[in-house]
Image (cartoon, rainbow, N blue to C red; front, side):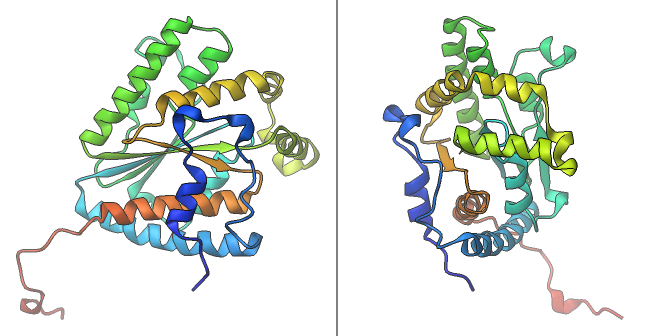
Length: 275
C-alpha cells in the first residue's frame, strides 16, 4: 500500500476556475502533492492496477465508455502519460488514437468527422493523443480560419462533448502544461540521445517559435471549453512522474464514480461441474 494524496487534493490542484484561468500563473510543477519521484511512481502504479480492474468491469458492463483527451505542447508527455497510467490496462478494452494533421479524406469532411469516428465504443476506454482541440489551437495560432470561425468551433466542441456525455461517454480532458525551459531540455535530449532522435521534427521548433501565441490559445481553450460535463484539468508536467500520478488519480476516481458493474447471469454456477 502506498501513501497517496486524496482525489480531492489532486482535483483541487488541477482544476482551475475556467473564466479566470491565467496560464502565466499556472504552475508547471506539482511538488507539494507527492513527496518525491518514487512516491509519485508508487501512487501511479497503484492507480494503474485499479484502473485495469475498473476497465474490466466497464468492458463487461458494455453500456458506457470513457474518453481521455491529452493535449499539450510538443514534449509535454502525452505518450508517456498513456504508457504509465494505462500500463496494466488490457488492450482489448482500450483504444488509443493519435491525431496528426488531417489528410485529404478528412479535409473533405467537417473537422469533427474524424474525431467522432474515433470516439470509444461502449465498454471501452478511448485515449486521444491530441484531439479536436488541434482544430482550434493550430487554426487560431496559424490564422487558418477567421476569429469568428474559431469562436464558433468552441461552441461546436462544447455541444459535441455534451452530446457524448448524454449518450454514455464520459469525457476527461487533461492539458499537460510544461515550461518553455523544460521543453528546451526535452527537445535537446531528442537531439543528444540516439534512441530518441526519431522523435525530433523541425515542426517542433516551428511551434516553439510561436510559444507565446500557443500559450494564449491554450488559455482561451480552457476558458471557453472547460464545462461541468467536460472540464479541463491543467496538469503541471515538468515532472513526468508527478504528471502521470496526477492523471492516474483523476482517471481512477472517475471510473470509481462511474462504478461499472458486470451483468448478472441468469443461471446458477453450482449447477455446473467442470470435468
